[in-house]
Length: 270
Image (cartoon, rainbow, N blue to C red):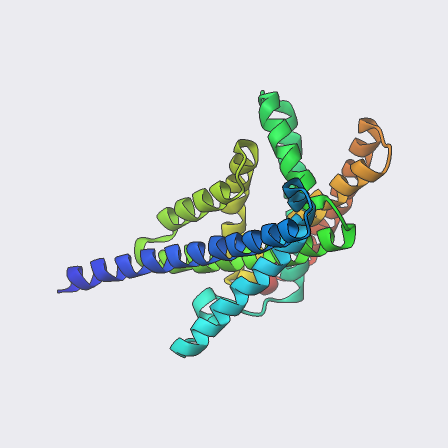
């Protein structure tokens, strides 16, 4: 009887995780269809839809969260407990953000020394440009605020945390990371976002809260969008970019080392 109940619980968690993914992708598809229809009515080229990518991300995220909130309200389940959203100490909040910044720079440095095909770089560059195109304020809001919140709700809260309860943290982490990577589309972004997902899951577990992984995600995207906008709007050499990156990482490492050296055992960052 227990084995039967356990199998049913596993199936339920899998369908629930799939539901989160379907909801997220469905909301994006609906918004994209609506924008395409509006462009067609206005007789604008369909290629112009790429300029509205950040705005579409914001609208689809709001739609996704609205549906999730409504469904949990109907089922009378607490959203915070379902997604493991808990307050974390300020030191963990800041440290998670800084870890995200450093991890972004580490990922970029790692990709620069690996033999990655140029076609993968080009596809990734095109994807990044679509997110940072148009109004840079909307691009910043969608990338630094909206994307980390909704993606962590879906992939770490909806997929990982749901599956972890029935199939364990290892398999749940693999499935969640794979889904997160596939969602990002092009091969290069698929690989490094899946890699990053494991780090976000680690922080999620250590802080025991979705807020921890959200702040890592915010830090990662903040670093990425800062350097993407800097390189696209300012004529700056690679050497200067490396110097700025080095100074940023040095500042972050000094903060972390200073904080850890002073922390109390009962109040450690992670």
